[in-house]
Image (cartoon, rainbow, N blue to C red; front, side):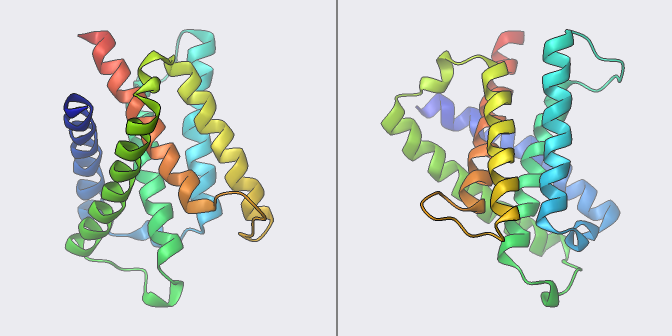
Length: 181
């Protein structure tokens, strides 16, 4: 499992680098977005991945890996939005944004390590296309929870679904990088 941990960290480091650079360029303008808008952004990215998987080609010269990275970063933004109240202000400094990014990616990695222990790295035998489908399913669950004003009767909440999406996106990145090697 140490290889998975290292691979996970490599994916997070790459995604975080983009997040921090965009934060330096744009600030935290994303703080204006409602979580439902972030959910829709993630849905757009996952839908593009699925479309490319089904068609076998793309007309826009951006690899699906970039979309998975975007999914990770939008999920972190959504988790921050769930945690912070709008009245806490829209502007976060780069250092504060990085601290929150690190917090949520640590939570997602801890969850992955626990599930990996219990499931025996079953994800390694999955197809990347199945991971895409699971991300889309989780997004539809999130949309339903949002329609229910965040309330669930028996199911996990929004945060658990965003964390699972981060982990599926990282698994897809790992599998894609191994396929290239």
